Image (cartoon, rainbow, N blue to C red; front, side, top):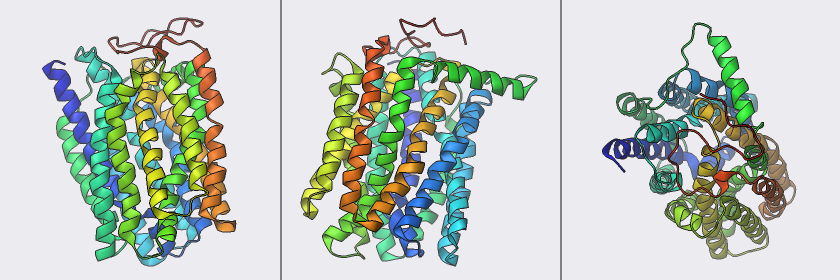
Length: 430
C-alpha cells in the first residue's frame, strides 16, 4: 500500500472511530432509556421502527446527495443532523413527551444516519482506487470494523457505567459532543478523491440520471438484487436482537437496574466485531466464493437465535451472544466487498444507500412484530420467531450465488469499475 492509500485508510479509520464512539454511548442503554421515558415494549420498538422508517424514506435522497454534491458534503450534513436530533431525543426524555413526538424525532435520527450510509464507504473505495490500491477490500473494511469494534466496546461500556452513575440522559449528550467534534475532523481531513461531484446546470436532471443509473446497477443487476432482497430479513432481525438483548439479559441477570450489564451486552458485540473484522479476510480465503461465507453465516446466525430462545442461563446467553456477534461481524466486510465489486463509481453511494434502505425496510416491519411478540409472550419467544425471519434471507443469497458474478470469486480490487456480470451488458461508463 502506497503512502496516499495509507493516508486515506487512516482517515477512514478515524471517521469510523469517531462515528462509532458517538453512536455507541447509547447502544447499551437505548431500550432502557425509552422504557424509562414511559414507553411500553411495543412503543419502544415502534420508536425504533420509526427510526428505520426514516432511513427508508431518506436513504435514496441522501445517497443522491452523496453522488451529486459529494461524499464529504453528505458526511458533514450527517454530523449536524444527527447531533441535533440526538439532542431533541434528550429533550423528549426530560419532558416525558408523548409517543408521536418520539416517532417524529426518531425519523430525524434516521435522516442523520442516512447521510453517513453509503457515503463513507463509497468515499473510501473510490479514494483507494484513485490511490492505486490493488489489495482486497475485505482487509481494509475489516480493519475499519475492528476500529469500530474498539470504539463500540469503550463507548457502550462507558455509556452504561455513566448512565448508572448519573442518569440515562447523559450518554445522549456525550453523543452530541462527539458528533460536533467529528464535523471538525471531517472538514479538515476528508476530501473527495477519485470522484467528481455531478455539479451540473440542472440539479434535478442530474439527480434523476444518478437515480436511474443506480436502479440499473442495483435492482437491475441480478447478483446485487438478490443480496439486497436478503437484507430486510437479516437487518430487521439484527436491529431487534441487538436492542432486545439489553432487557433480556437484565431479566436473566435478575436486576432491572443493572445498567452496566446492559452496556456489557453491547460491549460483547463490540468485542465480537473486533475479532470478526480481523477474521473476515482470513475467512474469505477459506472459501472459493464470497457467497459461501454469507450463506453459512446466515444459517448459523438463525440457529444461534433459536438457541437464545430456549436458554435460561445468563452466562450461556452471553456465550451465544458472542458467537452471534462474531458471525455477523465476520460476514459484513465480505458482503461489503462483494457489493462494491459490482457497483460503478458514479452510482456507488446511491446503490449502497439503496441497499441500506432495503435493510432498514425490514426493521420497520420486523421490529414491531418481534416487540409485540415480546410483550405478548416473552423475549425468548421473540428470538425464536426472529430466527425464522433470519433464515428467510438464505434463499436469496443462494440465488445471488447462482448468478455466477465474477465478484463472487474476486480476491482483490484493483479496478475502479466493477466486474461485469457474465449474463449482462458491461456497466455504462461513468
